[in-house]
Amino acid sequence: MRFLCLTLVLFIFSADSGWAYPSLGSTTSKEEKESATSESRFLSNIHQATLTGKRAGEGYFNSDGTLMVFQSERDSENPFYQIFLMDLLTGETTRISPGSGKTTCSWIHPTEEKILFASTHQDPEAVKKQEEEIAALAALIALCGKESPTPDPWDGGIIAVDSFMKQSVHDPSSIDSENCTVPRLTNKCWETSCTVRGKNAFGALVANRYTFYIGKDPQYPSLHLVLDVVE
Image (cartoon, rainbow, N blue to C red):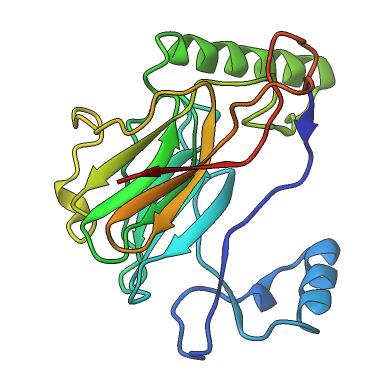
């Protein structure tokens, strides 16, 4: 199994100097200062938006820039990404994915109260796989005597991923992610990188073609980007 040694943090680039979140100028490590200096050649007024969890991944704004949906690892019982919605005016953050399995690639619909994301939570072995990953990381910590790197959430071959829609974008406090029934849009081998096309349809980039093998197991198909449109 491969491990990622790079900690990813999600940032917002804002022209408003009054942004409430802390600036990268407060970082203390030599590496962080050098990184901030290098970035300043291309970007200005950089502010950290996510302050919780081991790491954050892809994040996208809604049409008026008041909300951001993103993926993050911050659950002690799940070592993989889950989907969160942040109110950029208050900083309030709500998990909108069910909490089990792996998730990726969320997007806020431009005109409707919906969020699109990919998830493996309907995999009957999702929780078992989480527990196995946590045990493997704990064993590595015991062996190395220090905290292990974060695993690649998509390492190990093709995983059944489905695109879902979630309601109540502008009222995240009403979302019951534990008990909510999330409408399932697709049912293919492996799907991710979903996005929105126009105002009436969702588009999903689908990896589901057989040409060459990836990973260590030749039974899995290769990854190709194919546009599936769900009207």
